[in-house]
Image (cartoon, rainbow over all chains, first blue to last red; front, side, top):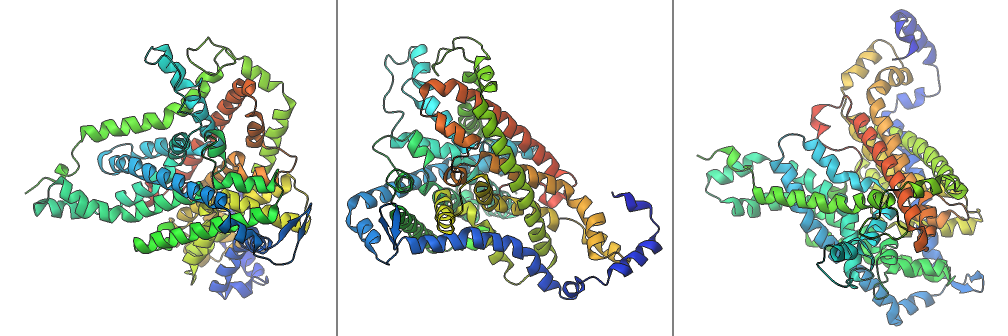
Length: 312
Length: 276
């Protein structure tokens, strides 16, 4: 506690009286207003840091590059290129394909794990949760780098298998392929699936399961009719939490993806780097955002979930 | 009649699966420290022997120290500012039932679900248009946005989870809002605040996209690592650096989790601090 803990109450009360005259009295008499005033710095930061920049980015996507500067006359030329030149759509669709597959595999693999901790771990639950999520708390770059070390031509898997004599030559397909990207993404984003799945499974009322068992449902029927439907919010949250960030992923595709699997993130980066066509980069980012938004909308409509519910 | 334990009886296949899953989760990460003490410039089996050579090389490199100090500075500022903002949000939401508060929370959680590259690119464009030079300051601004959701997610359960009657008692005894906060609320939520400080620091310390797009010529540790990845001959020193970062990160997380759990009421105890 503070150093003033031993001051008698009457003196404290007198002090409080003195301070009562401060200007914050205005807020004290209006608690709701005070609440909004308190969240406003954070909301302001997000407005300046996300909303504003995204709006400026949308404006810039209608400009064109002009040497080292910009031609600020409004034109839809960038979007016309994105629609007409197949390379852009190829990149975009490949990104969604890789992100989608990685999301599906991650959620499917993580479900039994989360189920195990929610239903079968009796003691030290917290220890399991910490162990499941600990790898997530290290640099994303390091986790991807680890897979480069493992999957490489002279990497851990190839040299390890050769050392024990299982293979004679290194397997070339491991690194620089879409498979490598998907494996790496699954590993790197597992925590984002495990937590929402665990929370959804843990909060299922066990008496429903007992009731179903009493009424004669076997384990499979109980799972399909009770556990799975009730855990769907967790599944949806997990899917969104992985799919959205991975579509824009840049590191993984660059480090372990091959020439056949560049993703949209790399293309966007190039526009701001060597290609130096910022308006095109902005247009690609806007396109990515719109697509992701549309996919989330369709997904949540399909599953009849609300994004708000899965987040809060 | 069926026994309730029938539903949750041990399942050998599931246990085996869980152990296999944990292996998949940890083996790739544990290979990093393993190879970092391997006496070979090639990262491959069989291991050649034990050496601390790569760590010694790291120690003598000024660029690494420079990047480390950069990361430290950005992380400290980002964590203090976001935790302060997070405290205000947590108090406001926990205390007042604000109309539209779930919309506010979703808005604040946006950075968790928007692809990092879009946030980085959008900020880069704005800074460029305003004419602000890229520096550690702009990286810090980017990190404020990335870290805020984690701060709110860590602090909110803390502020919602404690007994309001203690604050009421303080108010009854004549304390003003600020002194009630300082002498009653603050000591109760203090562990959560420490947890938030540590976790947001760590997120900033490990963050890549913002540092990459907004750093200009200033490199943080992840950006330094990234720049070295082009040179296969640097792999052993990168492994040594990665080992140190992993160790540092995990120690901090465990500290944060430990702090985050002190004095928490039972109902929210099972939810992990950090990721929402």
